Length: 486
Image (cartoon, rainbow, N blue to C red):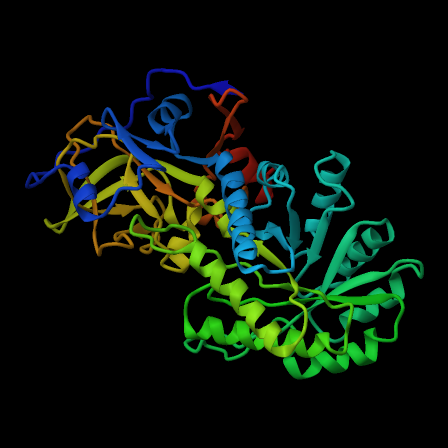
């Protein structure tokens, strides 16, 4: 682990000269377009700071392209969500409890799980291959058998086998039933002296503009009561403790979201009247993260309305309010991530389109940009006092889709003008969720573009920034081994 040091930057390749019409500085553009969120981003001496981390110092020490994870952001978000629910429950005199789970599929990296677990949270899994990770965390003392593990997803035999084995060993596993037959496996493989607390995932209706009307996941509303009566009510091995809800839009102030949440809570109240041990609902994930400097989401108001809606429906139905679980994934880890590139060339195409070529690929490093047209916060790292102009950003693959040419707040990208021999670095921020897993981290990428180096940034007990290299840039030897040449 290293303290940041001032070292001479590695020279970047020369960029060609392109004539342009000078404009006002990039700082002016940012400040006049929207309120600059100085708590997270600031510019000092013409260089960008991210959560008070001097990015140019990171670049000087490690080079580009690089992924960066700022660990304190993970704990900050967890504590913030916990406080929001605690405050709302206190104001509304809500009699249930709140439990924060981290959705592991957002990022399975060891440093993410360890940082999250420092905050007395619980976990949600979606794959058989999560379970050995949990065992390793347990062996290292990072989680205990009291840590609640919600096991979601459509489960193949290997997954249910892991779940049963860990239930038999005393882990606090709650299988979330996703189909009518899943319960039969636990009936046959869990020891007689073990009581299994179950959850049921309800198949919600999707947002009206989605291609399919009903979610492929979960059990339909009309089957739930019968499943409880036939398989759970009179079986001493099982307790139905939880109903699980998930909206594909996330927690969003829309007619669709409030309709689906209300429908779900009414179902809880109906089932509670015949199932006294049912006392918990899981409202899934869905807190959004900032993908634009114009981001405007009132977390406090949304939490208040969610809690109040649950309380009102339960009161109307004359049943006790449930305990509330959430399983935030992107919200936990997304804003901790950044991806930094060098501009290695500029090309004027068709005498009108200016391209900045980067030393990486959007398709392989940020697959959501390509697959979902996702926008991230994109900012210059240096040269903030330079004039700026409109550019397109091009990646290294030969695919025509490997580009980035607009921001969430505008239809164009503006970056500083760079003269021949002048270095320019750019950063994409809040990239910490899903990109490594969707991109197949450490595997074979389009045009054999290597996975970038990954740097972990933390603070010591005195608050001083410390860094360490988690993984170097992928090399050709590892690729040749995957491809069968070694």
